[in-house]
Amino acid sequence: MRIDAYEDPGPPERRGGWWYLAWLVRRQWPRCLAGAVFASVWMVLLAATPYLMARAVDHGLEPGDLGALAGWTGAMVAVGGINAWLGVLRHRTMTKVRMDANFRTVKVVVGHATRLGAALRSQVGTGEVVTIGVGDVQTISASLTAVGPGVGAVVAYAVVGGLMVSVSVRLALVVLLGVPLLALVIGPLMGRLQGRETEYRERQSVLTARIGDLAGGLRVLNGLGGKGLVADAFRGDSGRLREQGYRVGAVTSWIQALGVGLPMLFLALVTWLGARLAAQGRISVGELVSVYGYVVALGWPVAFLIEMGHQLSRGVVAARRVVAFLRLEPPRDEGTREAPAEPSVLHDPASGVRILPGRLTALATSHPSDATEILDRLGRYTPSDATWGDVPLAEIPLAQVRARILVAAPEADLFAGPLGDVIGAADTYLRGAGNCATSHNAPADATQQPVADELAHLSALHSAAAEDIVRALPDGLGTPIEAQARNLSGGQRQRIRLARALLTDPEILLAAEPTSALDAHTEATVADRLRAARKDRTTVLAATSPLLLDRADVVHHLVDGKVAATGTHRELLDTEPGYRALVARDAQDVEPAEEGDPAR
Image (tube, rainbow, N blue to C red; front, side, top):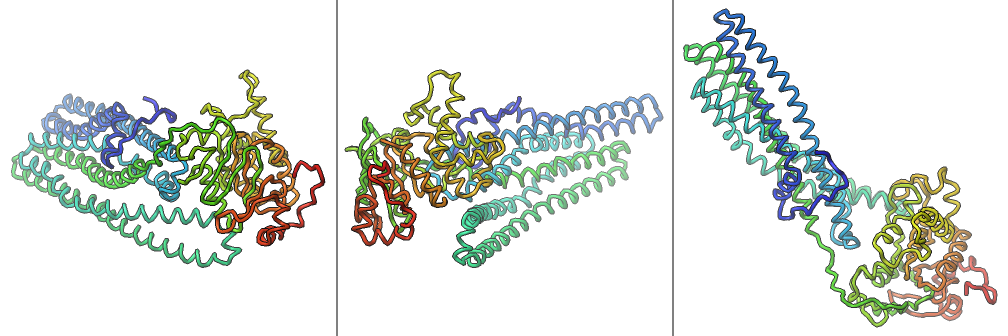
């Protein structure tokens, strides 16, 4: 069976950690069964070598029968060759088992994160998701060794015990009772390890999230002089995580030490008892040799059984974290009413903001978070009493809202890939979803689609004043872009995000601070082109830049999250001192609009 990294992983098991591990096994049961068979036969043949050696000594070496000696020796060589081949098959099969579990878990986690959508950030931290994707997935896949070497160890242990019955019942009882006694000693440590591992993973996810926040806000922290304060807090959290790691390591070290030491004591006891029986003449020299061989052969299954317990203890902790994530659910979409068929007014009663259709509206406030909250309510990312036409947004099916209203966040994620794909990812998704937010100029002839796509990309880039970005890159739209566009400047990233939003051509575009990182000249160009590109389309900009505000048809001045005044930019400058104080710091950037200027 091959591994298809793109196949449907199937509905995951969410009842608990053990259930999830069992689901991973069921999803690839033929491969897991093959791994268990290969491992079982491999370990049993390890025990067959001492058996054959005992026969070579008793029937060939001791009586001087060279033919029998050669026959038994040849059998040992053949068994060794077969076992080497089985070892390769076992390792290859178990590698595929681990890879399948890895890919399958990644797919169900990523798929569920996609289904959660905007609700993801409100329900779980970024660090938790990163810790699951980086650490827990690997731990879960490693724990599936239990279905191969683990099963093989149990089978081989039983077979060796049965072989030793033919040598000595006393030795067989010691072998068969040895591992249960080891489990009684190591079992409590496994339970403690699960508790310590759970706490460690939780602390790790918190610290991972803090690393991301620290890296993202490093420049701001430097500017505010808060780098040292945050660094001290991070150092304290890191120290606590390190101490928790030491506690996990202490339990793990005891398990590993006992896993090595106790089996050696157990096998030494078997060897000592076998030697006494041979000295008393109760077993033959060949049987004594076989006992020594069985002792060596038992080392593998005993070691695998202990390792299996260790990996399963860690794997079930990781699986519980995955299950907890999979149990998260987005808010229920109970919308049953149809969205307005025609462009209609968006109204946010909490702030008093009214968005007229076909207009360019600006929200100006000294607190950007107030404007962001309004956009989230109008885009139905947070519960509210907002209405669209005469219909409450909450009563419209979410799919219809997403198809026609686009919220362009200032820090929206940019995925790695060619620039053309980075810009067109949203448009491609919307076109595949078959909603009405696709480009109105998409050709019906599929053979024209690549050309039309490139023209649409170039048009969106022009509207965002981002053509210079394409010209500066070595392969234009085909140039690879790193995740979050780290190989671009802040202003370039902002224009790429704006171009991506414009490419989707939504009926209603809600954008927060789309030009805050641009110089005045580029910002003025973006303002003019954005107005032209969105002519007769509903557009809302949260901004305090006079260059954008002067191009708006309507400006809402917000104070404490509520509309304090409404008018054009120049009307508010003349009549509202608070508005003038908010935006006049850049007023010199605004050139007087001539009569008939389309910007007014």
